[in-house]
Image 1 (tube, rainbow, N blue to C red):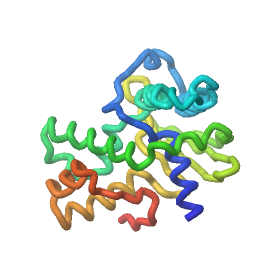
Image 2: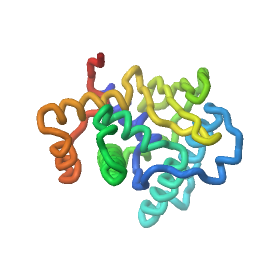
Image 3: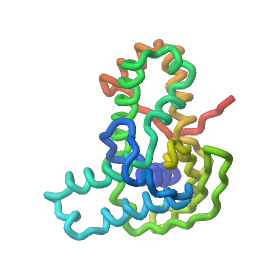
Image 4: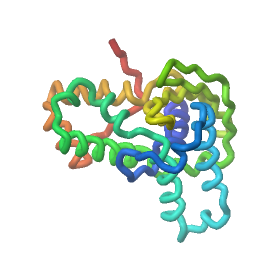
Length: 215
């Protein structure tokens, strides 16, 4: 249970309180950041928001979440995450169906992780290494604090000069791979429309950090 809590807290740094759709390029696109710089600036922006005294007032919680959402949606590619989590089924979907799935996937992330971001205000992030291969990169970090001690590997893709996160591996567990395994199981047993119905009805309880054997 303690291990699972560490995982939830770590992923919350990137994925919690999301309410936006696929990110679009912003003013940051003109800034030639390395993958590590992109991850570092995102984390620093989120922590800066969390530590602002004015945002700690109960009546400003919604405003604080909106600010965090603004930061996250400009640095995370939810479309890439949703596409890889769904797998081959994505190829058979038309444009509107793909957009619907992305919307439902984002809502699933928000429902799963919302409310856990506050635990990060006092955490320390160590940047260990960066590995780049053409238009993809991996940034390895370590998250340390009173409640966490986790290795995080951020996987990023270069989209028109801006690095977007499309997966996070937490202590060896890939967010995307775990979602994919569980989505594939539901599709086998209940078909793709059955998966969508569960997501629409918010009847899908995904455990994104359970042990999953991938082929």
